[in-house]
Image 1 (cartoon, helix red, strand yellow):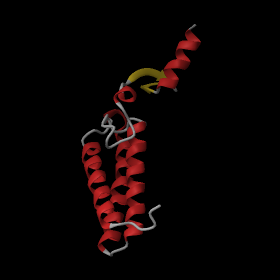
Image 2 (cartoon, helix red, strand yellow; image 1 turned 180 degrees about the vertical axis):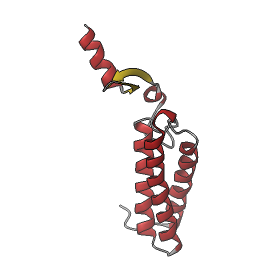
Image 3 (tube, rainbow, N blue to C red; image 1 turned 60 degrees about the vertical axis):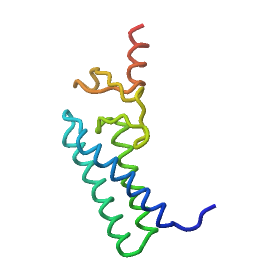
Amino acid sequence: MEKEIYLEKLEKYFSVTKEALEKASVALDERRMADAKDFFNMIQCYYNDAKHFFNKGDYVNAFAALNYAHGWLDAGARIRLFKVDDSRLFTVDKEHAIEKDCCCSGCHESCSDGHVDDFKIQKD
């Protein structure tokens, strides 16, 4: 079990998170732009915090902030605020990235597979 955060590991996480940030920044859901921008702002803040801690030599807090940034990236990708399908950078895959439209809460929006299954059951 590792008990220290090494520079090489931190540099790898910075690289992966930066790449994911760049992909997400050009893949915001235009129908939910305010929410997508809000998520992206949180990600950018945590990423900047990570750089700040890294520059101070505080690798533990840099690593923690990077993990928060990437957690927000993954969450935004999973709820489709970011239209990405790169499973190397995000916790999504092509199957989950397929968008299904339906009417939920009185508005036209993307539905999860669970919603689609519920509608099939209700239809029958």
